[in-house]
Image 1 (tube, rainbow, N blue to C red):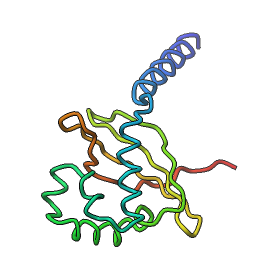
Image 2 (image 1 turned 180 degrees about the vertical axis):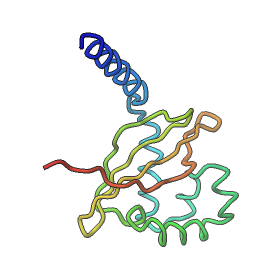
Image 3 (image 1 turned 180 degrees about the horizontal axis):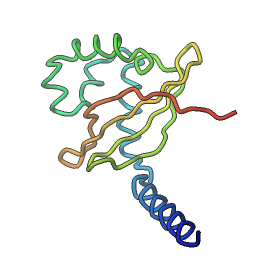
Image 4 (image 1 turned 90 degrees about the vertical axis):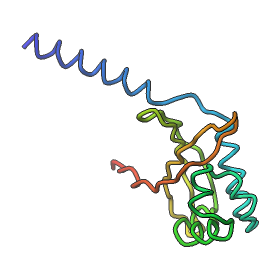
Length: 138
């Protein structure tokens, strides 16, 4: 019994250490990049919004108009958010992911992971993934 308790204690302490290493201190430059792109979307300024995308995304979409159409159709909550909050910045498998919590005009919460890349000292958005909302305990 003592071995079981010792083993569980050790496992929990190691899990806590691993988790703590995944969450990083906030990076204002990353948050500024994301907020600046969202501000451009709110003005329908897809040319400016496109400048915050990584070179790979710019190559994929080719034009600001194509990029804007994709955002309007696939990420309407980002195109027209009612509120934007920043969650944890995490390091996952060598990549940096900024969680962003968006409230749409209907009051629905959306959790997104922005994959960030630093290119020539400037943060760029390399992709956005819609996450499943976390479970809320009663």
